[in-house]
Length: 465
Image 1: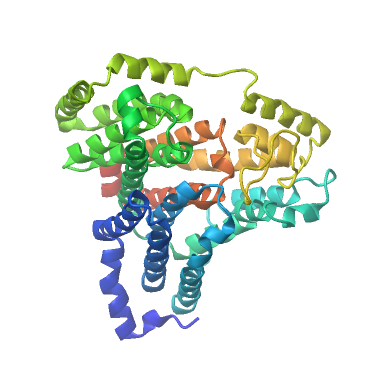
Image 2: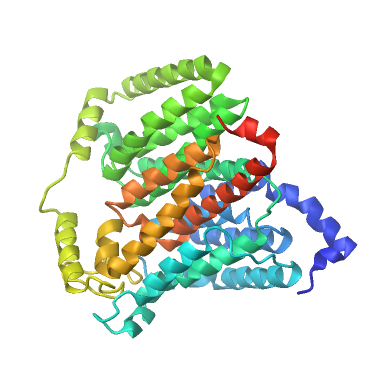
């Protein structure tokens, strides 16, 4: 390790650049690149610029905090290409090389502070269960063939590697919670861009018929918004200029409902009352301003529908119909029954993620056989060993959440709770990049936040209720 921070010239450069990488300006730059690329269908060009931007943050910033927004937005830009052949992304190889070189430079230039940390053991437990999935049922070598290898590695020991790097390079003596929340607000803004782009592409039919399943990335958008929306309300509680954040949070909920993603409607509506109640209870003197703002937003929505000649009653009826459109014979129910059959055949280690299943074909070249539920995917693919590993991980995370009654704790609980609930009927918990890496990063921020609350009584009085 060179530890270039020992050299005064290099140390001064790093010290001067770090505030930029921790600023709204950097978040706006990343979100702006991603939003422009997605809205105007320049996704590959935007991804290239994002890879270079993230590479610069890795090379020139000692900590890995800026990666949270960089990796998240980078994962959102190509959603229109879901299921496309790998060849679509070949032009990004030079950007990937630059990113890899930046990682290598970082590891050489900055001395790591390796520690096991709070989440090492549960992350290791999941990694072992993921790797042993299918033991006794299918050859383990199947786990090391594509596409299963991608999921087995990045949900397993690859995620453990991400954890070790974050643990080594996330600051230990700073409260990272406010910056993490700002970055998640940026992710939420990008989520709104995904929604507005989808509506714009189908504006005429939307105007005539109201909400519908018009764009295929609505379910992925739902994952991002469920994770990011609570942090808009967190910022509304903890910042003096609360109204812009509050408005953004309400708009994110509206996007979840109007996207006609069934999961967005159900789980967005499940968490929104808690977000609204927590925000109003914890906002103190700002409470009446936020109540008035919410009332004005409802009026604005009603008059917008009227001006566009969209029948609000029809919108409500279509939304309720979509949320309740659950047929026992639909694809997911078939997959759930199949999952239980697979679990009974191999209860200890499951069938492994390489198992091809019996119903339906993969949706793309890098798609495994989905059971569309964290519970059923775990039982069928990893068996009781995987279930035990994930329960252990959940126990450690919940224990960390309950260590202090903090604002960040409450809104992170709602974010992860909504995402985890949606994953019970979707695949989010088995999508390592970016979703599970985002969740891991946020919990590590929480762990650092807990340490600062323990050490700083003034911060504890300010950040807890």
